[in-house]
Image: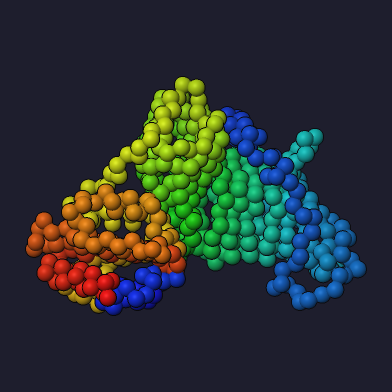
Amino acid sequence: MKKGASVVFSVLLLGGMMASGVMNGAQMASDYNDWVNDTVAVDSIFEDSVALIDYSDEVTDDYDVDPSAGNVIEVSGDGGAYFKCVVNADGRTVTLVEGNANGSSELTIPFLLEDDDFTYYLTGIDGNAFRADAASEHPLSGVKHLYIANGIAYVGKNAFADAPDLQTVTLPSSLKRISAGMFFNCKQLVAVSIPVDANLDAIEKLAFAGCSSLASFEIPASVSDIEETAWMGCTSLTDFVLHGENSYLHVDHGALYDCHGVLLHYSAAKADKRYAVRFGTLRVGNAAFSGNPYIEEVELPITVDLISDGVFKNCASLRKVQFAGAITAIGRHAFEQCPNLAKITLYGNPDFTEDFDAHTKVVVAPQEPPIVLPQSEQGVLASVLEYVSTSSCLLTEEIANNENYGFPASLGKGRWAVYGNSGPKNGVLKVLEAIPADMLALKVDFADHKVLRVYLEKSDTLHPKLLFFTAGTGGNDLILAYFEDGNLQEIEKEIEKIKHNIGS
């Protein structure tokens, strides 16, 4: 990205505009059940997984269907545990379809199983494999510590749901995803250990919903996809720890964002009274703030377009949600059970129906409020960069040597920021329009949706400041550069050079 961006800057500032401008507990359970029943068909969440899975490519080569495929084997594990497995099509690997710890305090699910002197590889665990039916004791009763051996690549939906005593879980590096409802309602769960070399790429919806003792969660660098509601009802959760070079997710003061502009989850036990959602967020995900008893004020940036289902449901202290601009829609039950929310002002013409309690007065204002920029000691243009660069998917770095990025040294030291595939979004443009008009030195809106704006702050002629913005429709297509302490005459010469190149 850096190399491509440097070419962009060279073309724009020094070579004219010939190029495109850019490069391509019980109450919780009740609340939870109410929410799920009202918004999502329960069967779609707690359906059984497929009965059999293919073995890992790492275990065996291409094969024909083995005659033993579909056979059932029953194996005893450590501590008297019972495992019922079905032989997969290759004849060497099996899927665990039913298990019982038989009261052991620790349960290890092994990769190798022996039956009649033949060794099988256990590569998958079926959905609901350790989930009790209504008439029997839970198969994991008494189990405090669960270990899943390396080599097991798949665990189905709700496999360990409702385990009454489970406190710690150790997952293998071979596991590809944490399935929907996998540890749903494990109320005693306090720690989930995932290896740093994990191949885990996804955490699905409701995976840890209702794990009310879970205070923190460590996300490895490999995880790229997290579904909404994964930690819904985790009433002790205060923060996420993001490991390694994870470029897919972002953690900000207890809030978890993905790289698609979605606020996935705000920790339910985070005790801050106020939170400002990061600029660049497009949508607040399902049940994102649900159940947080502390939050009183939430500020939404102008980039937010949608409030999803159940976002603020049961936020007992919530009294203010500040919208910075118009939104398209509000999901169902988004503001239910918010007893202190007396009034809310919406902008535009959002689609909403059953979103507010009867005591909440809803006002739809025709005119959007003005953008309020943070106050920076470095001035207005620095405030703009500070505000916009809070986007979780924005690359921001110091410019140590301007020539490396196509800028003359005379422009001064600076910072630059690059979005990927964002285009000239209205939110960004509206922030720029909040800059005083006398600072706008150059504005060009091209017919093919490219945008170029240059702002100059010269109230202090010894330390002038420059903000350069360009956006287009492909590649790394939003670039924002900020310079301070440049030479005013040289800056003005560069602006004139750009004007000349545009006109030529």
